[in-house]
Amino acid sequence: MLIISGNTPLALNINGEEREVIAKPSDTLLYTLRNELGLTGAKPGCENGDCGACTILVDDWPIKSCLMLTVEAIGKKITTIEGLKNAPIQKAFVENWGFQCGYCTSGFLMVCHSLSIHHPNADDYTIEEWLQSNLCRCTSYQEIGEAVKSILKQK
Image (tube, rainbow, N blue to C red; front, side, top):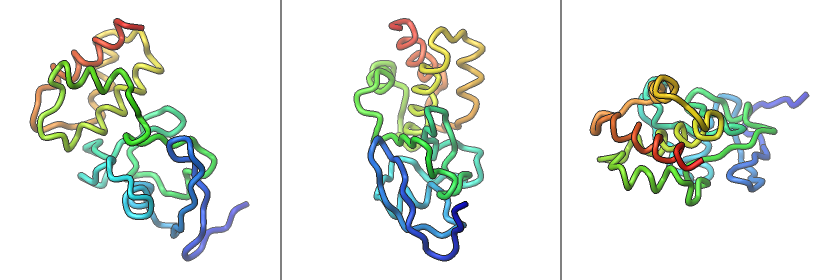
């Protein structure tokens, strides 16, 4: 059993690399990603799990990093937007105008990427269900949904 108290060095698998961080037991993964590792793609929004701007993938499932403690990430595969290199959903967002200001975009990209992994034949209901986990105040969810549908057709 790992006992964590005060500042403790931890090894995390981030974007396919083993990274060492110093974390307190109370540090959220969002805090550690942004402030200890300089991975600022996950955005602090509500910081209570409502908006989804901080969404990352943990073992390929979307997780709101503001709700996960850094210590809970030990032994997990963490993927941030910085690790999502040339994924089809990124191009689909551009082609379908799936963003405006961009603040929420990284969280939506992570959710949509995970959706394409776990539900490659997702129907409209499933897509809508998954998109409800994130909020956007600038653009229409229609464009985001179209981006997802465009990559699912390719699979």
